[in-house]
Length: 477
Image (cartoon, rainbow, N blue to C red; front, side, top):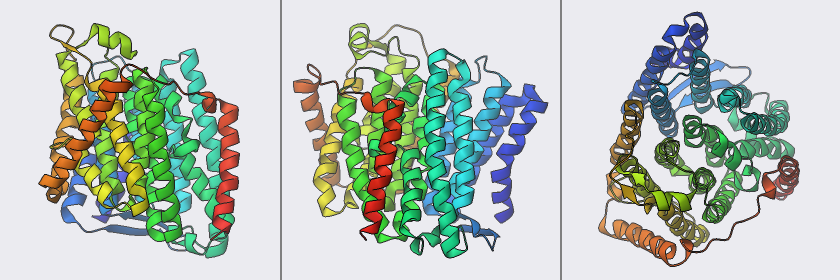
């Protein structure tokens, strides 16, 4: 299994570089890589034995692929496969598929490594390849949004890199375990970098514009899997240190509520979906032990929603209500929305049940409110009228949606114990409350919230303030 693991990690990069030499096979290479990645993830899930590799003993450079990692690997494989299928019949150049392979491979590395310096390299490659995919269309506004994303990411990772060096100075190793003996400033700097990259709470105001302005397949990648590259390390750190777990759970709850509040004020479909991603990041962090399953469920649903959003006649909800959407788009749109709400028989139900069961008592009320708010948000999407005429999705998009929605249904088998009468009743009650609020209030009245926090200078200011708060919190241990 160790040789297979190295081949799995290196294969994506090898074929990405080979794409430049043999460009006519770009799509084939992309397809083969994601199929191999999917097979590796399923094999890892089947053996149920962690794969651990120590690459450089003196520096703590190591790999760990355990039960938590499996969910992120499968998320990456399924979403990238869906994007490959969606773009197969388009005129995208080999450059696009080379960057897609680079992004896929660097995400796999980010999920597999358990040392700070390898994670730094992986996250930087993720940022660069994501930037190149965001700006692929070369439109003026998209170029600015991409540069903004890259600048914020690089600034955050500079703080992170200083923290990694301080961990090595204290522990003589870059291993994640060095966080236990690291100085307070190292913990604060590392957490700041990961919180910014993960789009968490006020440090995540860069996310909605970035995800909304990219092309639909790229938005599916960004919201479905790229943002989670920093969440897995946060989950691992929370399982290492009780103090970090308290912080992660706290910002998770705050992020879940903040994202829902902003999503309720949006009438642009892609911005609504992007703010919902912020909220769902909070759900992933609120219960670290089951965050992997929630990440898989959310990633598949959100990728499907963004892919469909790219084919809608309008991004504005009032116009969509007036025009309607074709049933061929409305059906996958509705199923993915129901999964986000936690409807039984879709993976979102099991993910939400397990998350709510793992919450600490003080989290329960706020997270329940966020769950009801999620049902309100997706009520705006679910209750767009369908029409029986209109253009059918391309065969590539149909295949992509089949992969994502099929994954949502098969993922129900992760934990069949959640399918009890009481849990299904709670889920249906939550959804019913959300729909009632949608029809009674949210459909007719909304309160648009200010977006000043998305300006670049405010993003950097919030980063500075976040670092001060993290320093204070760590030194208060």
